[in-house]
Structures are given as structure tokens and as C-alpha cells.
Length: 169
Image 1 (cartoon, helix red, strand yellow):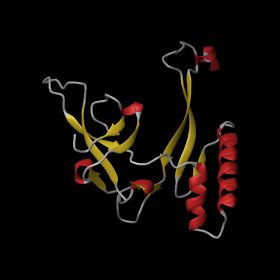
Image 2 (cartoon, helix red, strand yellow):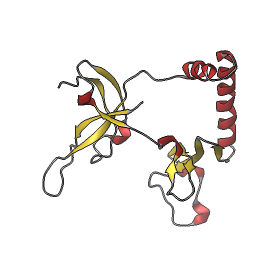
Image 3 (cartoon, one colour):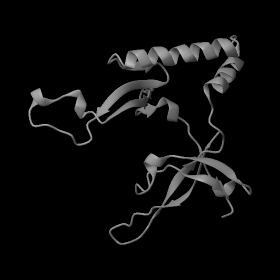
């Protein structure tokens, strides 16, 4: 298992007028949906895919209820989910004037669980032991990739540009 990346040229120029290249992750497979996750988990347990699917669906419903009741949800070994409200620059001068009408966007933020082995620095449990492969090392053919719009043109912090990719191009 490895994360595949390719070279991506930023559309933003540096102070020197250069458009630099950065690694961008490429998604190579279809989205793994709840049904497929249930099947994969069932292979590793004594439960049926239907039992796992039912638990996952109920987990999502209960998490939603808890998040919308102003709770933070932490799943041991996975991470923490919390709701964040953005006002989109709609600030007011006095605290008594703050209202929910200022909220322009509500986001569920996920933070991977931190794993702190004794005597070493903090690492994120989901990101521990990640390997990377340059797409040019995979050989010919096309790879379907998905898009990550938040990372577009941000000066090289990763992401995808979507569409089909020909590694030979």
C-alpha cells in the first residue's frame, strides 16, 4: 500500500516569477462506500457484511445527532470529529449583537488521532508508516483520479487536478 503522487505545477508565481512544481496525490480507485467498507470489515471479523453495514449506518446517525447537539465525537484509534461554524467575514462590533444569522458555513472537522509512543514525537495514527510512489514509476496506462478542489492553486500543498491521467504524459 502506498500513496501515489505526480508532479503538479502551481499556477501561482513566486516572488522571482517562477511557477514551481509540487507533489500532488492521485486517487487511483473508485470511492470505497459504506457497503464496501462493511464487506471489508466483515472479512476481518466474525460479523456478516449486513451486520457491519447496520453498525456503520447507526454510527453515522448517532455521530450526526451528537455533533448537532454541540458534542465532540472521538473514535479511539481513528480521530476526533467536531463542528465548526464560519462567519465568512460577517463580524459585529459588540458581543450582544452576535447571532446565528452570521454563520455562512458549517463544517464537520476531522482530526486524526495522535499516537504518542514513549520517547518519541507525536505522530498521527492514520498517517504512521505511509509510503509514497511517483506515478512515473508505475509504468504505462491511465489512472482514474478524483479531484480535491480545496488544494487547487494553493502554491503546492498537494491535492489532485482530477480527470484521467496518462503517466507517460
